[in-house]
Length: 356
Image (cartoon, rainbow, N blue to C red; front, side, top):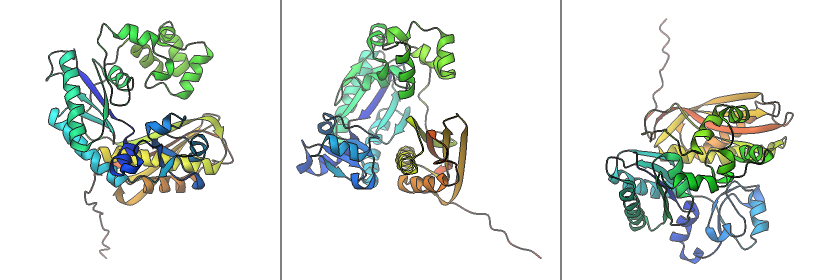
């Protein structure tokens, strides 16, 4: 049986700001673009979350919900610096680490821990080591596969630790709300609510055929995870071909300004993911899905490999002009980088010399 730990830093960007600026501690802190500039919330402190603020929310909405909030522009270089220290703690424990973003990762501790209870103790020590190293709290989940470990880490935030054993899993998953199933997005939740599926117990009653008709191949994944089955390995940092993030919109959108805001937000997410993997891309691409489900992509080469989220977002906005967005309603947007290389690596260009 595998032993998997999922570690997720608590409100990472906001916590870094509160750590380095003591006057912000205990106050609702929102890290993201300014409300006056149609910004988007990257993350927020738990004090702000009590007012209903959450990531990806327009900053103007966050301001209405929490007028006393302190808005801070993100400082990604500082977050990356602290993230590297945290990652050092992961690799001190095991080389089997799969970073998922700048502030979360899976660790496979199967060879270190004879049982799940030992894995839980290992996760507790890792939480202490991270706090001692950077002064920030992390939540952790421990289980026998990635899905359950991820779900467990979200269960008791902040600074929580949850263990899900094979004996615990059926009862835990039966009572889990559909919204809490990692991998089932907002549109998927709406589809399931429409057929009165609201918990794991309800989801378990659906056949593979029904789930596949609703979600395609993802339906088979859902059929497995609600039964505690997830065979995905912890993947070491290898040579991925691209890094991308996408978002299905709750409503079809023709507003180019809103789409630009989303592209910039996704560009920042791609930049953070690339930074977590110490990779840079030589090409930026966007993906749009229109309301009739037609999908288009557009790409643009970069003069030098980049992992800067601001740059990626700006390039994505330029690519938007090469699509029919605005005249055609959009239901999904995506941003990514490809032609990856190690960050900081010098890019060489083949020169053409005219021998006449």
